[in-house]
Image 1 (cartoon, rainbow, N blue to C red):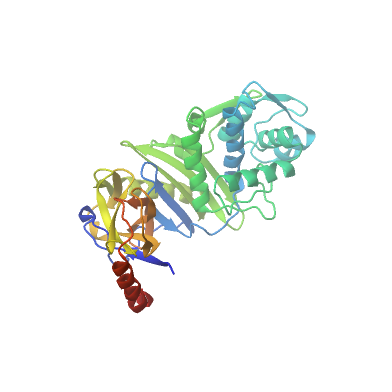
Image 2 (image 1 turned 135 degrees about the vertical axis):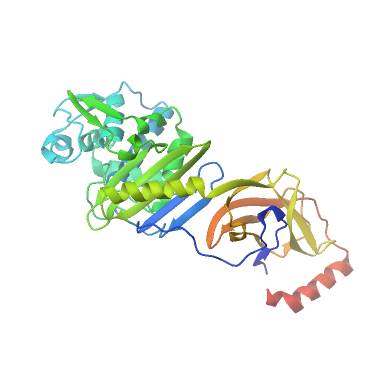
Length: 385
């Protein structure tokens, strides 16, 4: 019977060998936070990242994803128009007292303006007009949002409307909002610039981007902010400095000022506290060995698909550890290139990166005698694993 194994890793550049866990050395006032590096996918910081909270206006990021997907697939164009119903006007427009682009009731707004209204002005009327135009109702569109979230691998995010206005059952997590932000950046590079647009004017009303970090010269170029009563202030943010890009989500902050301060602190730490180090030079480099059952040898070397870089805490390389996790012993025969397991890179007690590992060479079945010896060995010591 196969078991979950953790194998040794030959990565001297890590300066650690399955080191003992250590806690993160960064603290934030946010109740929930998640920070990742865009290039490597490394998780640099995680605090209650899977704890659900109401998204408020962060839900608009999923609405925007639905728009960008339709544009990318050619189902919509920026010249398409959307009707502003009385419901959209009363619920999300001028009479609502919420964030709005001040679209006139019974008017038609081109999709280009809808996008800018949602991203720059956090316009609820724009969200509702789009939702009604696509699905006939916000409720129907919200079901589409949730289905789309599941298709993107966001297993917890659930939406009840297109705006993020308070509604039962609406929830997201810091991890999944950050993953959604990365998806928006990777999948829609032609449209991502809207998130850093500083202002937008509609119906002769000029409004600046409601994300204050856009204007603070901190490298921030997106994405959104929100506030939910009882859950505090939240933000999903992207920033680029010195050839690196970070994505983060913070939630549960006490004020707008604290949201700005804590976000800047987390980004500054993420950019300054780590250095990139290549730990696998080429695809053929063996990173460790796994146990084999019934083969001509007792162990098999494994490799990653290509070169591999990790982010190492500056001055604290001992906080990095690595292990290969696989179901084993691996039964022979094994073909070269077969997927064997996963290389896990840890920063203290945070799982930072995961990379698949593959058989570095083929291994045939052993002789009858070798298989018999292997069976006896597994019978005697396998239970100890």
